[in-house]
Length: 227
Image 1 (cartoon, rainbow, N blue to C red):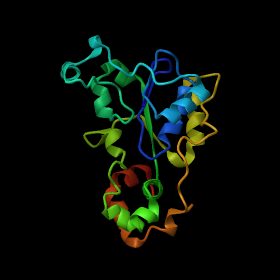
Image 2: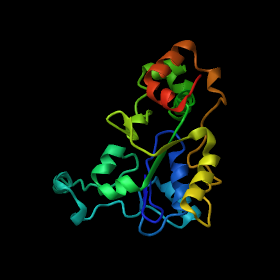
Image 3: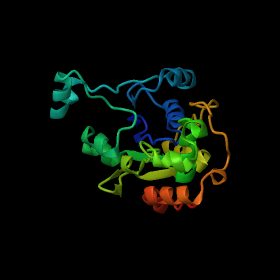
């Protein structure tokens, strides 16, 4: 996740929606005062190449800690801003002015496509057999993002951009932040491509489709996605 004081925005990092690549893209317009949570070692190198920045300001100082953070510190687990913090978790550690005034956004992806992407990333047919088998064996764990950008079931961000049109997102953000250097997605892919099929329709059968429609009903309604 990113909290940019320079451009007054908060990016809530979604899961399996090119979140790392988006973080790298946004890091390029950030300054030394902004919060950038850590990426994996390989992705941090890519971020440094792309933006000359790396993870920074993500540890809370003693003065910024709340009561629960002090307890975590005593237990040897100092609280810090984390990559997949939810909107509710972030709001606790930000002033009302920052939370209310900054532009908060995230990205969502067609859930049928997201599930297939995750299916291959975690081992695909060699490990799980069919997509249906993958779903029945816990494949939806850590895949849904609606709870990350909502509070009490209500969307808590100003905008949810569709993964399917990241170029338009970059153009809109560039204009919104009024920057000389536009937001651009990195020319490399933050994670290796393990997907073997282009269309999710090729491997998602009717039973898997129904399971996904039930699990992602909120996202489908919000974004107008369909099979």
